[in-house]
Image 1 (cartoon, rainbow, N blue to C red):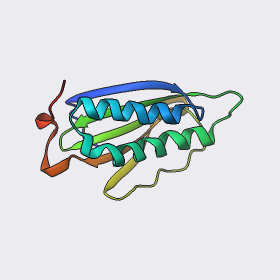
Image 2 (cartoon, rainbow, N blue to C red):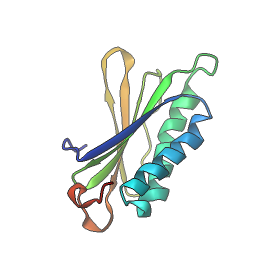
Image 3 (cartoon, rainbow, N blue to C red):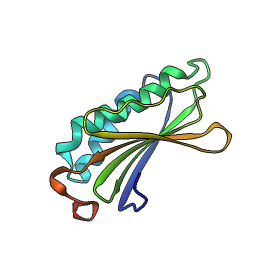
Length: 129
């Protein structure tokens, strides 16, 4: 996962099924703002997969929070999900993706998915609002 960030946006959601359409809307809004609409389908699928894993592993009677973050870094778009739900399986990568998990203090973790920017573009070339 790349360390230099050019742009970042995030949203905090309750880990319930209603978070999934909000996840999709958030991705659409941010990628439109960043002029990265060609990445919309792949990024939406990755974000939905990561958020859905937290929802499915959580307790529906006492849902936790999940933070979804989109971050431009070097030649990639990072989709990151912060949660504290125990027992989540390791994420599976989709086509052209790199995925991983960073564990924090007290059970917190960040699951991430790295997607290459289109056409050899780097984060500094992305048109921002």
